[in-house]
Length: 388
Image 1 (cartoon, helix red, strand yellow):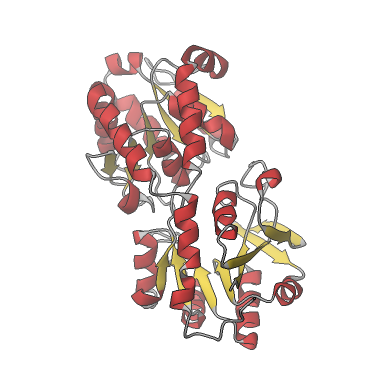
Image 2: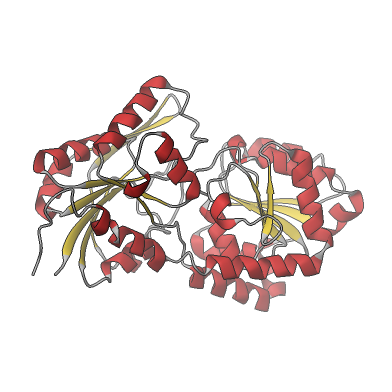
């Protein structure tokens, strides 16, 4: 017997495709994914890997705009799409889109159980706005179950009124095999890769958007605090793009000695080249719901230095075992962690091995299993419509 799942999510993100492929391969699931947009060109330059999609999906007609630093996305045809796929359970990725509220209304009118897929944490930058908090709590009270990627998101939901036994873990995942193989290839072709991308002999790597809340200037200041002899030996590479790029380059030019490279935005298949030859990933974010670059770097056998407000830290970064956790905004603590990784190579190598071992359990199949287990949490919410 197969059960129909409909998942509503924003864009065709590269890291979601392997998860949905894994879910669609389960013999008792009939999956249909409704994307609200193909991509968001104002924030992301990801390639759309349509050729890798192995599940039923559609992209709704959309209109998108940026208003007062908020992303506004409007869609047509959601009710028609849901009526057509006639799901037994509806999974809604977030509550911040008009389509999310339309989906909630559709589910309630048709007595279809609805699960909310939440990645936000206590550090959500919008928590201070009372209308937003009221809307969140209403949406949460209206849902039958919840999916979260990790510990921080679960605690966030509990604080907003969700019952712990309603919450299902679907750990955020990337294609571990793809990143691991790419990093191994980079190491086997060390000289060619370094020449192609103009990479220092040794370097720390940051991957993500070049915006202030990602902690990019904290990282630059921490690098500048490293002893001069260490900066002569080890560089800093930023992989990404964003509105703070010019300011980052301006400040980087004042650091001497030292080498700071800004490699620009790179697609998924290029990233292992940068991870594979790095000393460690540094993720000094002031606010990040999860931080999938941590998954990627760990799959490439890297130690991770991350801020304590990065959503994935409580799940993925074990302080002193596969990296270091530092307080957000703590430039001195960041510099000390970077120094420890740089000067103790055997320890850094051991940390990298621990990273790979740990992230091997965070696979697309494991995430898909979380989605599939929703049936147990929703068994009493509505009568399942079974497909022979």
